[in-house]
Length: 280
Image 1 (spheres, rainbow, N blue to C red):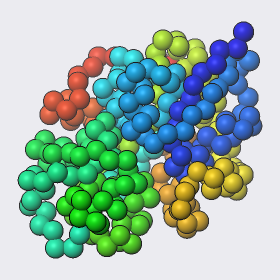
Image 2 (spheres, rainbow, N blue to C red):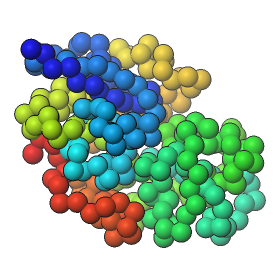
Image 3 (cartoon, one colour):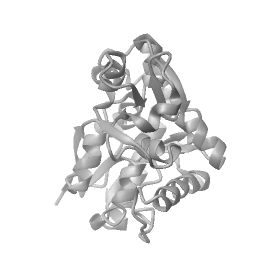
């Protein structure tokens, strides 16, 4: 009997790029596993995982830090790298010294962007959660004096009349020497390690297929990319899909461990003794 598993990931180009083959039946699954695919922004996925709604899901690493007893990480499918971290933006003339005095728009309480903001400002933060694509317009319109932007915002914030106050990924890399872990694919632990390994292998094959057939996913990506230009789509994929997406590896694992340790030391995420990976 086929077990139908709900797989959640975002409509962002990096996710639709790497999951295209899996979503379109181009990667074989064990006959006992079927997938129901749901797309949602990452903070919606984070909160759905809090309720255990998805068996397999994209999660901010910050969210996984809260959910390690329930979910384990897969080695394939992660968004992790260098030069790709969130930015703090504001209108020209804003004094960065005031960041601890104001509400800052963030793409969700459980996003890695919000965790990094807390680490950067030593925990003295007043976050105001917004859907990520609302942050730049809200700061530009004066609804908030500053915001933390993710995804394609790195390439488009100037179009909204904004300037970058800080690159949180660059800050992280200088402090740790490690790539910045943004999000990963997690599996609910009650599925067991064998199912987790089967899913991990399938996602790894989907990532490899994406690298080997880069044009195949274009229509699928375009269908979910909203108003994004082809140039921004290409830069988005190039920045967030890399060798760590194929396999997190030892350096990637050290980066995730460092994020969890720093977050726990500040009391932002709970300490956990659960193993990091779902498949052992």
